[in-house]
Length: 453
Image 1 (cartoon, rainbow, N blue to C red):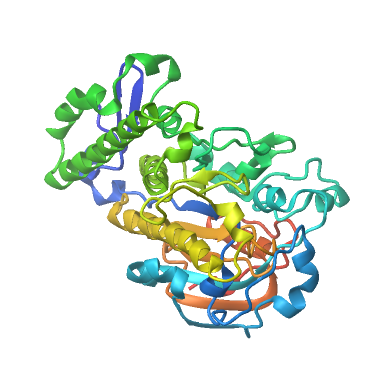
Image 2: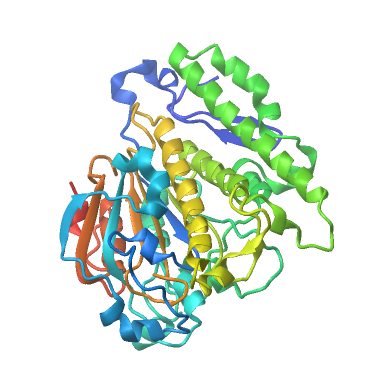
């Protein structure tokens, strides 16, 4: 068995690229420990947020009337946040309370806008143009062949993917299988003109993509059974700390397999007349997809991931376990915020923040090649393409950023930007933090230097 810095376990078509194990490197010398790779995760929240419960100082704001299309942007001068630029300690509003125990690892950015022009449905443009920062009309005006161009994740993946299996990984937690909306409502990533990067919704398909070739799928029970013997042999070559890390890693995969099996059994028990994935418990489903993403990042299969917690619009009736007794429609609720309607809708925002906080905690637990954590070496953004689901606004977009980016980001802050700062400036900043020497992205006007340490 040949020693190397990284090691594959293989059996009958399944392949597991192990995390870095120092005792497999050249004599375990310090010189063989390389600098960890930087990772970028973009978490997308569908249908906007309840802004009065999300942004500091908005608690007493008037409840919004329904405003269709892009009409909210026509009145943004009287509705937008009027914070003066500056930096202060992170203030956790009622919707952000789930972030309490990770607040030192998260910052909020206020004042981000995205330009728009008519030509595509407001929800479709919110998602499919999120990482291009260009509307279809803007793209046409600039001579770009496709309204969605090439998204930020793909541009960065071109740079970071030279040493990975996948340049990027696209994941969605759309729990509705019927084709209720065009694909633009359920994807935020584009390879380039006319080439969407379709997100993977099914945990089983995502698992298969990460670990094995599809032609072996029907013959395989799970990866950990296949590679168990190879793992036992490898264990004898490892130092004590590495044995612990290897066992934790394999148990993480085994746990994923158990959860996929439980979901498979749940779907088998559902009335076939009902679109089955409607009943998947949202939290279990989202965290399972997140764990699969984390395995991919830990194994070095990719350094760039997009993660849609849900699709735009769709009117999908979904089960938010622990929140509502019965499945509800997120999009429909965003249009009914009057009275106590916003309080019911806010429960979904809090639920989404719980999933984001869970992701941050998991990334704190995973060790990287030099003993630092996965979170230390990552940028983990969480935001939405709409500022509010009732008004369909493209201004005051919610944005949270977690992770250290290898010491380049100082966290635990509220960063109030000049109102109207373009979100393309943030995308350009992420690209630079990931090591790209880019001077502009889409309609950017500069970097957000306040994010840097």
